[in-house]
Image 1: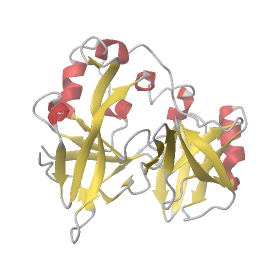
Image 2: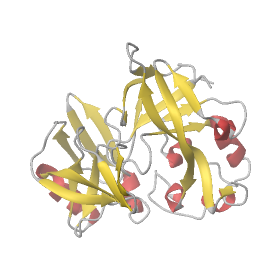
Image 3: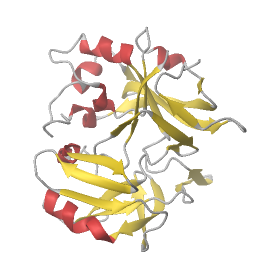
Length: 265
């Protein structure tokens, strides 16, 4: 199996960027899920409740993160900095973290969505924590839900599309690394894989929700593909597709992965 697509999603739940190569860090691919949007109540926003987020594309150019809308002729940008200033505390699901408010672009997003919201940044040095009965559990997955990296397999998508009336693209699953596997869901059996100088260790098979039902071209939602996927990929009350993985860089090895690299398992 080889990498046929590499993607990052700089802002949680906004459009992704396809890459030829990427640097891997302990928190995933560089710039992946380093920013997110908070609504007027300070709650993080996703396509689950705001499917129109799919209509905002992102681009990185000349040190700027650039935003554009598929249906509105409006563009905005921010510089990619290590620090933006004012610190806030928020949550991603059950984990809490400190983020920095990006003051220069909140009005643009508020106008797009029709309610007050603002962009925040998760600095590289920060961690997310979860309070448990045993104490505090530390997590370093940036602003991604549960793990730094998501890997999917084209054979798995082909198998799913064979069951759908209207095929869907892989971007519904927002994967970082896409491999050209020969067998559907062979990734279920991985304990770890090696790509270049990085070892990716299995966290769990990725549970899916209604987010995958959002059409990224229109921002509209439907029942598919989640309804069909639920008929044959339900495990422990979750509907599964793709593998969540941690990153472990090998000392002295290049942290760069690129299209065409072999996924060794």
